[in-house]
Image (cartoon, rainbow over all chains, first blue to last red; front, side, top):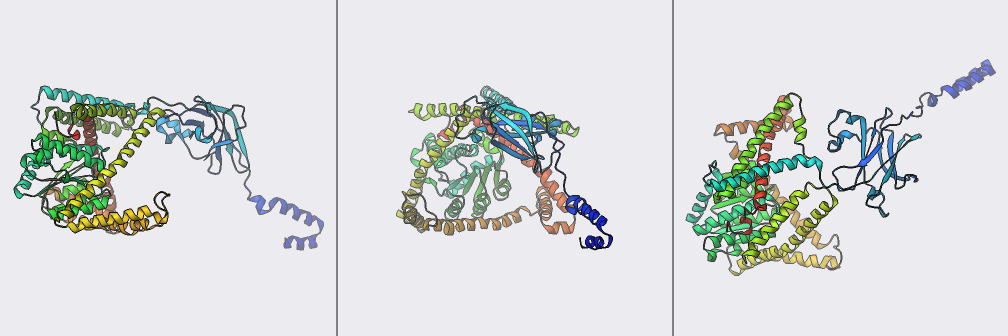
Amino acid sequence: MLLILIMTSVFGKLFFTAGIIFIVFFHPSVIFAQSPPFLIPPADFKAFDTPNDAGEAISLTWSVSPSDHPDIFYVIYTDKDKNGSFEKEAIRIKSNTGYRTSVPEIYGYKKENGDYHHVQIFPRKIFQGETLGKKQVYYFKLVMVAEDTKITLDTIASASARGNWLHTKKINNFAIMIILSAIILYFIVHARKNPNMFLRKIGGLDAVDDALGRATEMGKPVLFVHGLTGMGSISTIAATSILGRIARKIADYDANLKVVNNDPIVMSVSQEVVKESYLEAGRPDAYNPDNVFLVASEQFPYVAAVGGIMTRERPAANFFVGYFYAEALILAETGASTGAIQIAGTDAYTQLPFFITTCDYTLIGEELYAASAYLSREPMLMGTLRAQDVGKGILIIILIFGTLLASFGLKFITHLFEAF
Amino acid sequence: MNFLKRTIPLIIAFVMGVLMALQYYVPHKLSQDLLEVVTRWDRIIAGFAVFIGAYSLFHLHWTRIKRKVEGWGYSAFVFFGAIITLIFGLLNGGKFFWNDKQDGTMFDWLYYYIQVPAGATIFSILAFFIASAAYRTFRARTNESTVLLIAAIIVMLGRVPIGNYISQYIPAVADWIMAVPNLAAKRGILLGVSLGAIATSLKIIFGIERSYLGGGEQ
């Protein structure tokens, strides 16, 4: 500026005018200013009822635009009337986010999914407090917004949200369940006709008799420790079934059984199971309800209480059956330090290494579910074990087949078994 | 009596088992509402079951005190802890139990400064037990335990900075062990568990497995 003034005084008006023009047109703020964004509107704006839902969501989709940029937004306005004012903002997303690829359960795995945006709208939340019909149609307008510019698409998309009676993406799961159930039921029926079925030996379950015999000879109690999950868990149900079988044997041997629980419902079921087992063995007098008790309902107080019982009463055999968490190793190590025979059974794969390390025998995964049938030797229950093995065989064949296909770049089998 | 103790529970198990299995495949609101109602029932039953649990706990420890069995002092401490907690819970910071729960009361203090640290203490013992269990496991007495020992050393070194200092391949091998053989074994177990769970569910739904009702096959 100073330079221009000096030059003006030297060269006169002409240079003054040229200087002003230079400042106005070539000032840095003018040179480096961004030009207003030029928005190219997207196309194919559509709305449809989100499939496989309870009838709460509407899906919206539109093609990507060459103008998509983190600073540019897509805003969707909604109204109950096609000619309404569209004042309610349903959703606002950055234009470089929200693609169909993130929802394969709706659009599958097509290559072009990356060329389309997708959002989900929950109209009942947006129109909360307003009267809405069951078949209410909602209308949507798509607006592309830059800093100072916005363009509204002419297309008004509409849809109504309806609940679905069948989750079509879970049909694969349903089919697998039906096939496996049919196999299991077939072998149950088959086992009734052919009760002398061969079963592979399960070391942990064969050792149950030894453990109970040892406890009887030593005159020390047998401790049955439930996992931390409640009766809603399938592993706890399996554990109570095993408890019933063990209690029956203990009643026969006239040994002393103690069952510790951390859930009152599991405790009540366990009391019933043990009582019935003693009744079955013809020794109802030997049943003591005080031996099936609740020690604590929290994880670590449970550990402290059970550890205390182990160190004070020194049971001859410990059974850890059910679903365990971090307490598994503390319990099993404490039991190992007392010199008890220890048999564990769990489907908690994170705790399996700890049980394998510290227990004499461990029922791994499905062996927990097989235990009840194995111990009872009831033909119908044993039929399910054969069915499990056949099911595993089928899965192994599918896995090998899938691995081969995937090795050649064919991934359809992966998507066929995908869970949504 | 057998009808009440056996038949009705078996019918309930069958109906609810089939209903809840199908519920998983029906996304409709009615299906979701059914799930919510059943879950609520579960919570209500669990609420009542707390009284059964409390009775069992106090009955057990009262018997131990009465009979002066070995370690009965611990049982006395159960009553001491329960009474103190109950009193402060009912006092509710001077506002009493019929008002909303107050914050910063003695009841909270008992929880935050006694129960939580005591639980953390028990949890911390795990570190020592892991060390002793690892020592037993890693004694290379068989081929399997030798393989386990080598794999464990690689994984442990691969998870700490010194592994990378020794060789850049150690973290990569550790990742491979976790992502391939370890994951394969884990999935194998999970597949078996899933099959076992389906088989157990069917046995219960069709009344083949009845031991959870108490007793066996009759």
